[in-house]
Every structure is written in C-alpha cells, then in structure tokens.
View 1 (cartoon, helix red, strand yellow):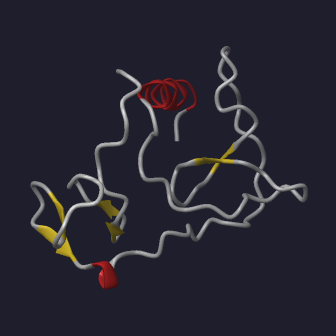
View 2 (cartoon, helix red, strand yellow; view 1 turned 135 degrees about the vertical axis):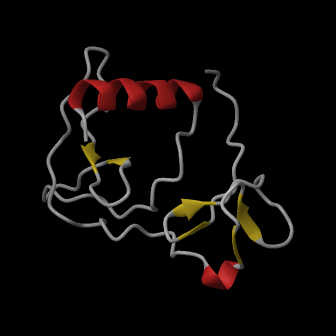
Length: 113
C-alpha cells in the first residue's frame, strides 16, 4: 500500500461509510449496497466510545499503536487521557495512510478483535 491521500468521503450512516470521493456533491452512497443518505441523516462524527475507561493496546514490535487504546465502538486506535479514558474522538473512518492500514492489519492479525 502507498501513503496516498484519503479517497473516501467522511460521512457514515448506521456505521456504513460513504464510498464517494471527499467533497462530492449530492447524496452519500455506499457502492454495492444501495445505501444512500443526506448529511442530515448521517451518523454524528463523534464516537460513542469517547471518554470510556481504557488501557493501552499491546504494541507490535515496531511500536504500533504507540500507546493508544483500541476503541471498542469504532475500532480506531485512540489516545488516552490522564485519567485512563479514551480521548474524545470522531468515529474511525479508515486509515489515513497505507502504512497505517498495514500496521492495523498486522495488529489485528496478531492480537485479534
């Protein structure tokens, strides 16, 4: 994988991510599912797992995920607050880079869900 810029829109509905390009006009759509929605029908960006108690996820030999915890709601790796809670965060909407996607895949293959 390469470290190319994000290719999908950020909008979600029912946890399904829009597969149209960022900044697109018109309805959000998930190709192959028939799911379409307007901005007013989208899920809120803030993850419901924000601020729940958590602990750092086990690290891979290369250091990933860098002291972050796995959010059980959105499966994003999230920084912890001083009081050992998940920081307020948007729902995970896909890896930012190919390197991050590869590290996530290796982590889940090593540690599972």
